[in-house]
Length: 221
Image (tube, rainbow, N blue to C red; front, side):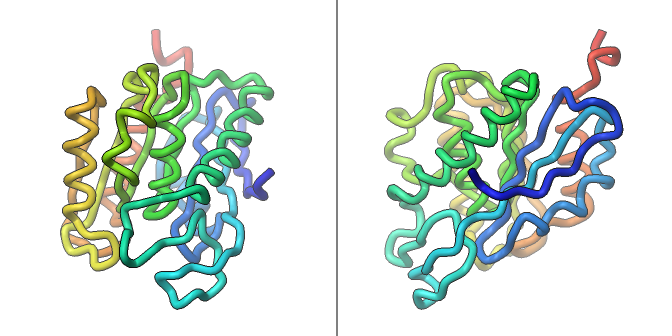
């Protein structure tokens, strides 16, 4: 089981956002974002730490990474990507065992973490509440029809990317958005004049997206 930082709500949790950090970071990378999202007081957050591994694109240096990146094939994942998706799926089952329904769970991720969030969210046999994919892309795009489940096409996706991103090219995200839309996914697309980062207007947009998905039951009806 992955180690994770948990931010518990003030009331009993009935929803959960599992948020995956980017290459070389850790679970603390986004834990400070929680108050800025202004979510209902029943939403739990889990910020797992990726394991340490050598990363080819960074000269083989060991760092926290969800999978190795081949500089010659940056949009291919491989076994390590699927292993990380399996590990995050265990966190999903942990929430299910705690009484949170699959339709009240969101997978979020930045950069490499977003690749994992998309891989897992698209292959699950049930629709999640949503997927938040930040500064990221769909890996192994030619295999999407093989990898994605029919049930996952009911999962709404928020995608945001910086037009000046030097790490994950903007067109990677555009290609991914277009592919997802052609495959029947509803994608809320946002772009910002920034690099490989998250900006305040983006945080506001994420909060709006999550509040819509994770309304408290008494607010829904």
